[in-house]
Length: 182
Image (cartoon, rainbow, N blue to C red; front, side, top):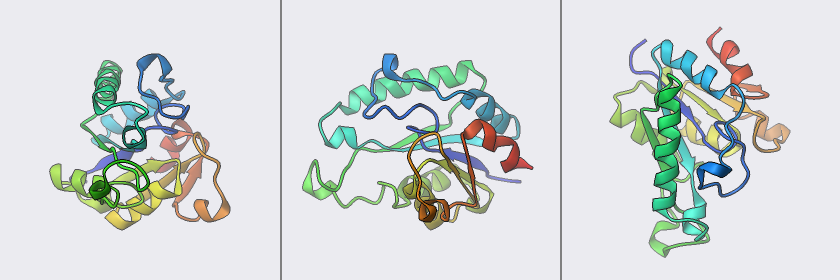
């Protein structure tokens, strides 16, 4: 299979979603995330994070704060044998920040970050997987043509209509890994 990646939401998939996390001491990795990502990496999948970061537009933290945390997170993944190819992020929010950025194409459920990853890395969308914890993650993946959409319950509360947007639903990324690749 050529040109494949696992797109990962951050808060609720990689780390516990404590709200506007931007410092390493607040960042709590979800149990089993490194095992799952190592497994995908060994199978030849690129690991790409796609994350809405409205805390930047809301003034909760700066892009520099986010970048510092991202570099720390990438170093942890690399040291665990699961290097992240890229971290795409949307710093916008429709109700906050600069007016000309409020209707961006990168904020999920829009597909901009996924489309950028597909383009930048020469991926075949049908060969890719999106793992997220929100309906918006699944809607972005669907709009980008991602072949497999997986919701995990380690982040948000999900309604029956949210669940219907995914191909499968699992308690966390760790439990989903074997089933996704079966």
